[in-house]
Length: 244
Image 1 (tube, one colour):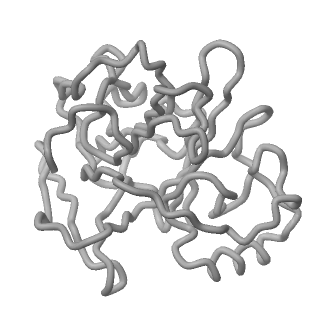
Image 2 (cartoon, rainbow, N blue to C red):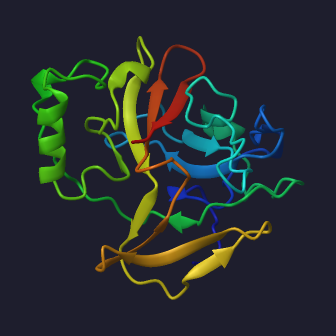
Image 3 (tube, rainbow, N blue to C red):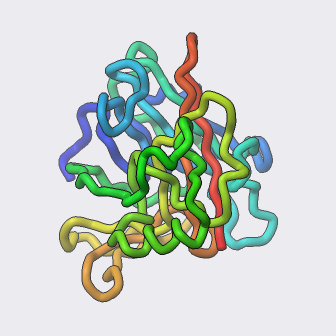
């Protein structure tokens, strides 16, 4: 990719425009967190209430195995961070790498979005978009009939791995979800990378067809969920994940 010169929708890497003093530190282990995704306000696909606002989502990725892992799945945990910055708060460059060199997720820039249909009637969804009159079995059938629906996306209805009981209330709105695997639009020339700590993000074939790469650690077949609350004053973000 060419050098980044402005905020862009992207996953992984280092954030753009985030002041170094705002880089989130895991309060459980004291290490820098990893950027999962940075998203820019868009009036249709991601309404953050004001042009120029940026949404940042991080989680701790300091553990080399599943032992003593920080509680990144918990929405009230200090092992993840989800927040919105005003355009006036942003710097004009890539955020410097923190001194402890946290693991960087594979970086990919989102150059386009595809519009899809989740198949769930709007009148059967609550105002916050996190619960539905349909049963879990009915939802599961609808999701699996919609190719690609349960992956990373913005808007629509959450594809709950478990249930909606962890969703924040009141006045929070579901805005998107991330999966542990990402698809690429085409075969990349670059196939793997290593972080300063030796972890590797592998580029691989997605079900033998499309190209993709591993995303954040969300447990077994996990999905993470992003909510925002646009009340008066500083807008807020909320992030958590569920696994099978």
